[in-house]
Length: 452
Image (cartoon, rainbow, N blue to C red; front, side):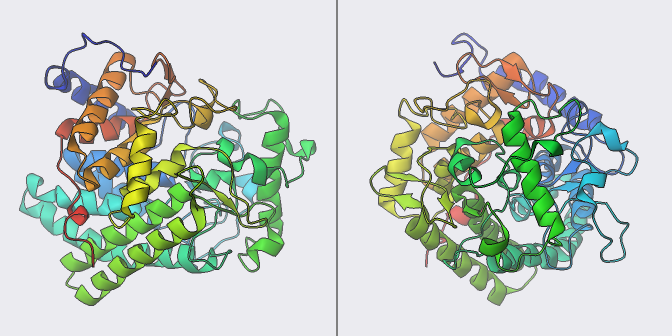
């Protein structure tokens, strides 16, 4: 059963005012005065791709805060271009979150205090977020438009550096795709898509903290995750010889689809900034990444995109929602588009899509990224539907997502069968993307006339 809680639920138009107000309250509650946290209960620091999704919603109600969030994150960007997946709040006690600053033992860089962030990354949704905040600036007046142009000018070179880091230093396989070196970098931490590749990492149970902090992982899995961080740390966070240094090196279809989408957003931003030559380069780069995703991650036998273990060359057998995200790409070939659309309407997934196929052996209705429905990836899938002209399906997905949150609350994720809320009950990206869904926008600008 797909979580469309009640056929008699009010239509979006009738529920929108109430849901809009509750979403704004969540974002206000999770604002610290300097940045937005994902939740007050589980995530007391600033997370990377959470910041991007939150900015998309803040574009409607407080664009100054959206820009502040993005600036705060990118002020911690490393000299090599990487954007850390967590920026630690110095006012939060060390024991409030594990692994915290002491475990990462981060050296000072670029004149910033030591132990301010992690060294992992997350999917680069930030260029898309910056473009979305800019697109809505006109609704807030001339001053907001001027601020938006200023912010784009500040962010653009930093966003480009982020893309160059991922496209260059992280191309472990040499095929034009970025590799992740830890499941956390995917944003989909315990997805079955990583199970096979993760088995190469030893489980050092001595790394586990007293009173464990991650209920979504077994002791063995958690020890593997911590071991990967320890090994990266002990190697000085170096990306030289990724395959030789790392026990987990994976090309993720969702991560790379977002990487290509970021290039399309950067093309739009470069156009606004009067850099037409750079805009053309970004569009070509998006096409190259799209072709590489198809070449390296598409399995014609399953009709699906799968994660590739770069160390072994094997594709994961798991059908994760990550494998549906290339639908966002306007230059994806028609056969692949048709296959993904068929998956979305099949018993394996359906709308809203669970994080892992419903018929798979690892499906777990309460298992974080092993089954539950997440608003952010469904929001990305909705964009993909619009990119390929499937407006009816996109609007149906929007209605189902809005009803899901209206019925159960702004939860971190949702049980895929009855729709009940899981995780934090006041999660920022759920609230922020509800605002965007309620605004009922048209297809992304880059979806029109992007070919060639």
